[in-house]
Amino acid sequence: MQGLQEALQYVSDLARANEKTEVIEICGKTYANRDLKRYDQKEKAQPMKAASLSALVDYIANCSGEFPEDRDMIIHIESPKNVRLTSALDNERGRECLFEVEANVSEFRFGRWYDQEAFMIEAQANFQKNEDMELLLKVAGNVEKKNNVAFSDDGVAQVATMTVGAASKADVIVPNPVLLIPYRTFQEVDQPASNFVFRIGDDDKPTFMIVEAQNQIWKNEAVKNIKLYLQSALAEMPEEIRSRITIIG
Image (cartoon, rainbow, N blue to C red; front, side):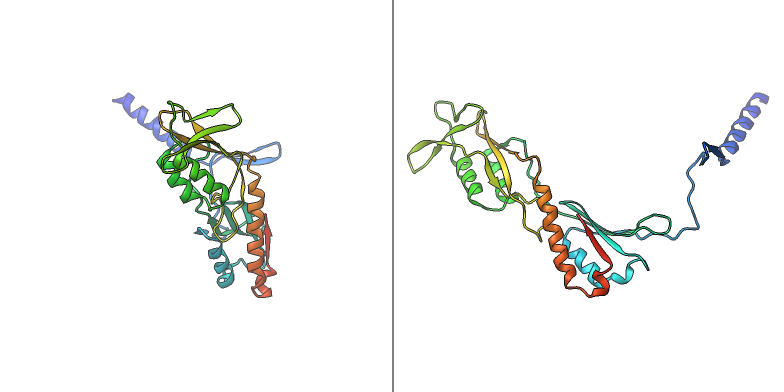
């Protein structure tokens, strides 16, 4: 019984010791042994969130009274899918984010194989129509096996057998590269076009894959398009609003 009391006393003392906050100094810098929350600091707002640039523009035009006093604002275009409205640094070199926008973009899986039906559906749902996309859909929708072989492939070019009429078939060269326009940024701006590699798989049934071919150079164009859209929107606002906002992208 005595041993149990001593053990309980030891645990109690250990708990009290762990409750104490120790402050130590190392190389002229002060540290604490636990995380501390400041109570002498103003609470920062939780950012509003939306999926369109027009929502951000509406907020700036109608809710500029929520901007921190005596501080300018920054629209930071972080990527083709993300834009944030934050304040300039305060006197403690902190920022307050008031609005975040994240675009709803294409869910097409580049670099993955699709069967014929899935490819036809996903391609039409996630790309803007253009001449090359119409050609891909024509090839993908009509390619078929011939003597157990759907196509020939030398590693660079592919030749596919496809239906060209009610009862006729022909070998056609699979187009590569192709210029396509997937939905990859905000709907309010022009979608960047870029080159892709189109491949037909050697499976029991035709399969298809689209691979990005330009190392994501399109992102620079998308950011530029977003910046131009926001600059145009701000230009129509009163001077007291637009003079406080800097766009970075």
